[in-house]
Image 1 (cartoon, rainbow, N blue to C red):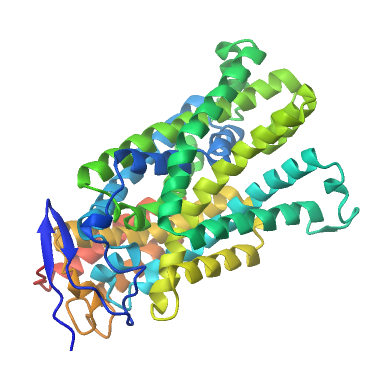
Image 2: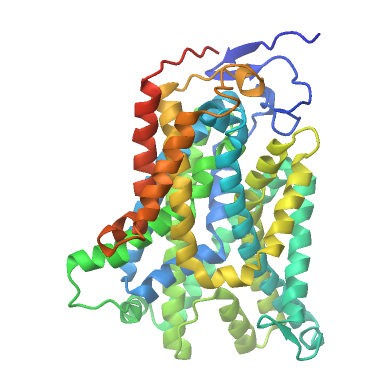
Length: 497
């Protein structure tokens, strides 16, 4: 008979002293980290966010906003405001990960129950698999471009045959990049930490170098920003209400939705932070600086391409190919594409593989390890045909953000107002305990989640309600937060650590 679980508190962090045996709620990958294993400093956490932010979708996000009708100033405002908003649940949920050393699936058990936690965990996992496919496809295109530069025969593989609009070299690049991603999943979290820390400073230098090139080649920053204003398709005669409902709010929701996944699953990383100060400063510094900077570089460089080439090159892969041809140097193309590959890899591993790997492992801990969970996520990322999802960029962001907003409202309310940051750590890993509720499901959490999702979807029923769907994350999170609060306040909780 195993000893009863014991905990100790050190510098505000809780540690489980007993090793949990493998079972229906635990395995070594989702068990709490010990305090000795919490080694990530402020720089490691900041590097994580910097490396995740510097990626092609971030580069293209502001460009898509400008193309839709926002000015470059409005685009940066939306990006900065969206990041500031999403930072709140990131810090709250990150606090739980650091304090208790728990991954997201275990953390979600406090609100949803030991079995009910599968609902938000799998919602987050499915979205991550979609993003994994998108990022892997983008990285694969860069791999294909590198191979084409190094070997002229690469682009002739398969002749002119195509499938769903793409040729064999594109799919070969996709598969090669997929294998690289799976290698880091197999290597484990310490290799992921190494990758993010290495990538962050390199990608900052590359981004700034690209910005310097654009300003010099296009005649200065003034000329670039003037051209950026011309790229905007906004109508001057549009009313402020029309602007807010058709452009600003939908894109703000999309921006929040960009990190809505990490806002839930950040405990997967903050469980390794040395202290609350490290996770707080690391997230704040990394998120609020890197993404606006990358987006500004994207806007500036895209505007410069109009001046230089007479067309807006929104996709950096296309730009790098053009630069390689202009400079007649394979080395320029290879180095630039390598930067794109590294940027995509660092984002993909951290944002889109770790969370679903933990989620799938949480389904059957005795049989599915982190590595196997990552392989499942990678396989789904192939089967969803990501080259198709890429064509539905904004719709994809808005649609899923409402679902995750509803889950986030429940979890943040539970941790802050219901538990007041006090969790029963052994209870998160035990059957018939604190968080078993009714058969492993908390009816209040399920009801609140459903209410939030339904309110967001109600925005599709009538034009007068469109704001509910356009602002899906906000409407869903607000409704689920207060529905959960009201339902849980009716029955007091008595958890102890």
